[in-house]
Length: 362
Image (cartoon, rainbow, N blue to C red; front, side):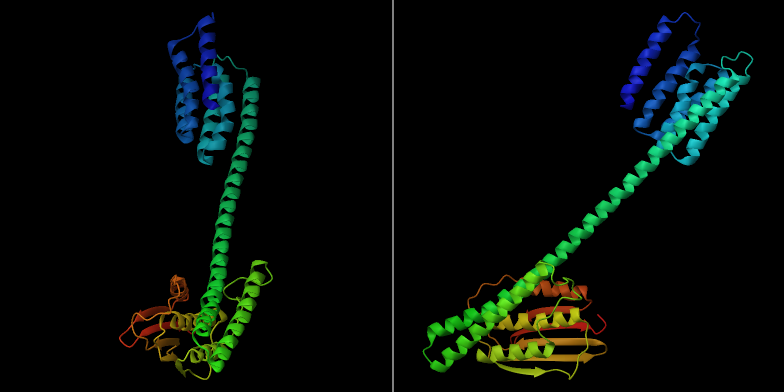
């Protein structure tokens, strides 16, 4: 729009000069044209355009030419105030004022003192209009940045909530459904009444627990529970989790030894991380370590850190044939990194060993 306006003004100015009968000088035509063309620089470099206009106006004031452009330069004060810094705007306004005063006191003046006053009033009105536009533009930029920040925060929050829901669903599917699948396979292979009764009981308990956990996750999705790591409800205490894991493994014919202190105080989020390690490790033993005969769970507290080791004596390449995504191990490694701890899961000579450590003040 600015370039179109400048082109129109330049064409009209050229036509007026070509048809005017008033005397005109070459330097006056050059300075007048330079003033018009220089305004076009505001489309790319407003400070450079303002500085160039100041220089051309000084030349016009010194030679006393292009006085007819004085009103236009006064109106451009608004454009300068809207696009340039306050010091440059002040320098431009002073230059226009000095040019107007110089024309008023010149012996061959063409502008009366009253005209100078009108020019200054026009410049002042233009200045406040430009200042208002600048303030509105700055406000718009602030609001745009705020909207972008809010969108980023919302995206991060949604991502965290999706991760938490995915973690909960993974625990349900990987743990409870694994138990159901394994004991369903037992029912197909055995006719022993006691074994079938134990498997049926395990399937029923796992299914009930899965339904309970799914209802809890649905409550999170509906907003009935606060979905944050600090307030994420844990289905069990550490003792209850270890007790449930021991029962499940022993029902699968795996002996379990547990070593843990009498009391471990941890924030709820850190405690939940340890519970997830125990549940994920027991699930992996049932899914991928069918040859295991013994599992050791050791929890120790040393020098302000809590250490958990979950190991089995499974031989290599002996699995239950259930699919694995690796999601649980990946998420546990990410969670412990966030809490400032360490996590490792690897096959050793004696079997699989899962090691996890967290600072007590996590």
